[in-house]
Length: 192
Image (cartoon, rainbow, N blue to C red; front, side, top):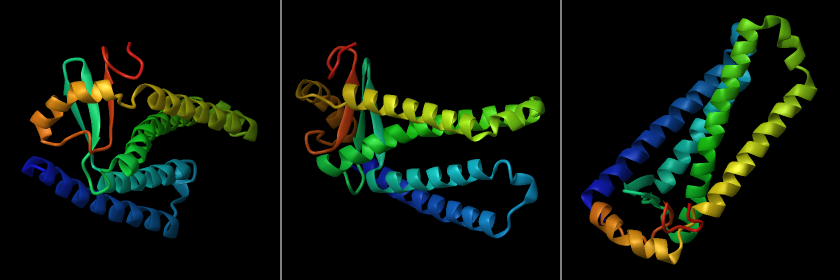
C-alpha cells in the first residue's frame, strides 16, 4: 500500500472518530435539552445524526475511494475491512446510504416548504395515512436504487481485468484482492 492510500486511511479514521463523537454529543444534547421550537424538526435532526454516525462507521471501516478513467469508474475499499467478502457489503451499504441521504434532504425540504409556505395544509400531511405513504414511497425508492446498484455495478472478471492496470497505476492496489464495485459504459455487468 502506498503512502497516499495510507494517508487517506489515517485521515478517514480520524474524521470518522470526530464525527461519531460530535454527532453522539449532538444527539445527547438534543435529547437532554429539547427546544420547544424544534418539535416539528426533531425527527429530521435525529435521522441526520444517525445517518452521520452510520456513514462515519462505514467510512472508518471500509474507507471507500473512487478511481475513474474515461468511461469507467470503480469504488474501492481500502480500509481495514477491504477483503472481498467484508468490503463488498460495506461498499454496498455506503452506496445505498447515499440515496438515503438524498431522500432525507428532499423530505426535509418538502416538510419545511409545507410548514412555512402552506401552513393550512400542515394538518393534512401530518395524518398517519400520508406519513405511511411517504415512508412507503421512500422505501420503494431505496429498494429500487439498491437493486439497480446490486444488478449493474458488481464488477465482472472482464471489467476487473480491463481496469486493473489503471488502479495499479493510480493507487498501487491490486483490485483482485480488494472489494470493489465497477462500472464501464463498454464492459460491465450490464453494458449501457
